[in-house]
Length: 168
Image 1 (cartoon, rainbow, N blue to C red):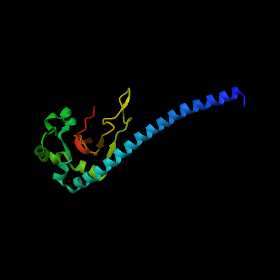
Image 2: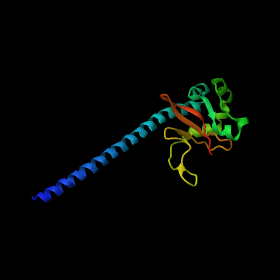
Image 3: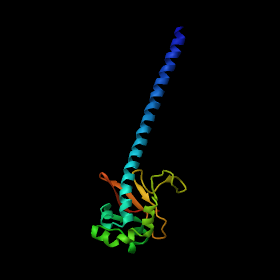
């Protein structure tokens, strides 16, 4: 084999190795992200099955243990301040429990009406966005006003209900 052909083969292999390894690294990175999202989904589903059973049974005390305080009614705080369900204590949660977990919310739990982050969920005329971040989940009941879309967020090592979603 001539020196020129050896050079071309060597150069071609170098290009393949450099770009091929880069692609492998990127693919591996994508796999890590996908595995992380999968693990997060599996972990949430385990939490979901537990809290769903408690909500459907009407076990208020057990459900309240899965609510992060302060509980923030971001929707009510903006649109209906006098009827906001935001609260700071477990005692306050007990008093407004039925307003948060109304028939529409309970039905949404029964029907598994939750979703994770969707990068292109909404379009504001300039860009796509979602009202939750990648690590959150959202319960979406088919309720008339007022809004009762509950946000689930990982606090420490456990998912909790953190509040009611605000929609701009």
